[in-house]
Amino acid sequence: MLDFESDSLPELPQRIIKGVIGKGLSGEVEGYSGKISKLEFGEVTFENFVTSFQMIDSTTKRDENIIREGIIGNFILDNFHLIFDFPGKKLFYKKRKKNKWNIPTDNSGLVIYAYGKDFKNYYVHYVLENSPASKAGFQRGDIIHKIGIWPARFFSMEDISRKLSKKDKTINITIKRNTLSIKKKMQLHDLFEGPDK
Image (cartoon, rainbow, N blue to C red; front, side):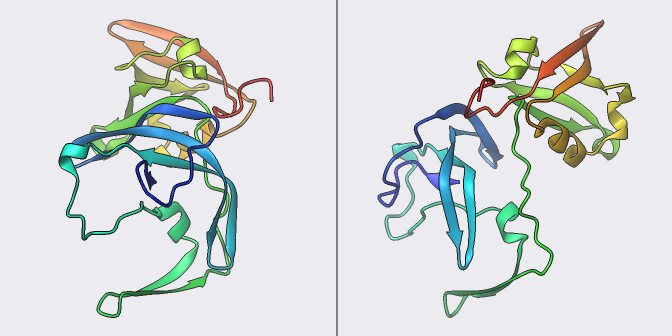
């Protein structure tokens, strides 16, 4: 995630999506998402990488002496052994032998939250405009009841994220809305390229 107003950010990607990019202590974090051509971390290069751009309210700007350009994120850092030398202001890293380059990228437009016992219940917190989810008729507050033929409680949040990251696949989800049980069919596609590319 990069600071939208960072001096080192030359420009935003050509195709961006505005929406909720995360949740912090003060509530939902709004901004944009888009694909950057590459991200270099030492000798490792991540190409065509989905990145969030945070909008920071100028009235809540931090101390100007604190330099912050963004956040690298756990999906990237999990690929390295890390040692933080805080007094020396250095980071030592070594690439893991078994990497996790296949980072799931949402292709649905759904933001799903887990709740309840063991966090095995799921509901739709946000639906991205003009996304496969919005076209399929999902609404905020819908309860995810089934994914395919299986109850949603059989899946972890990671399982669901990976299912929603598949490209050009059709996924069937049954939701509960008030007292109704509704079946939804959603055609997944890359949110930054559209269904025809």
